Image (tube, rainbow, N blue to C red; front, side, top):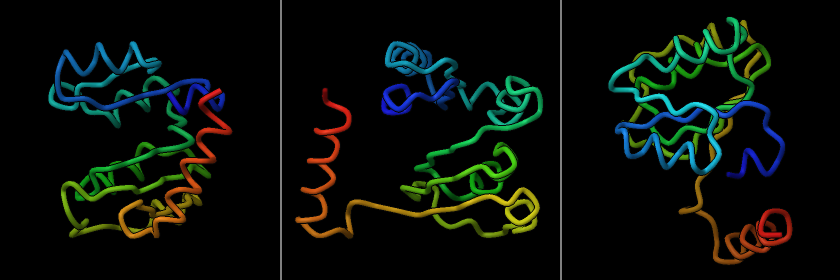
Amino acid sequence: MLAKAFGASQIFTTVSSEEQQKVSLALGADQAINYRQEDFVEVMMQATDGKGVDVIVDIIAGDYVARNFAAAATYGRIVQIGVHKGAARELSLFPLLSKRLTLVGSTLRSRSHDEKAEIVAELERQVWR
């Protein structure tokens, strides 16, 4: 929903069930990829004619970090906001360097109450309307 609100032209999501696919599409995704049935990297690369995607927001981490590098377009941005699968144990940074990717990490948990309130206020100003 936020990606649509800020003008993203094509939105992919990854899901684990048909129900999640339906909800994701209803909320604005152009394509909801069931990662249990399809390789999301392959689907995104095919859908973008091999270019990759410009922005990835990931809550999974683990082995997905390398897969995000593969799915990202040159000069793509990856925002890591969670680590559901834990650390990326073996990771080549070469794709990060060769594609000139930007990798940013963030979480709300470690932020102060004031920072969280500021984020909510900004969402109200920028998105709720």
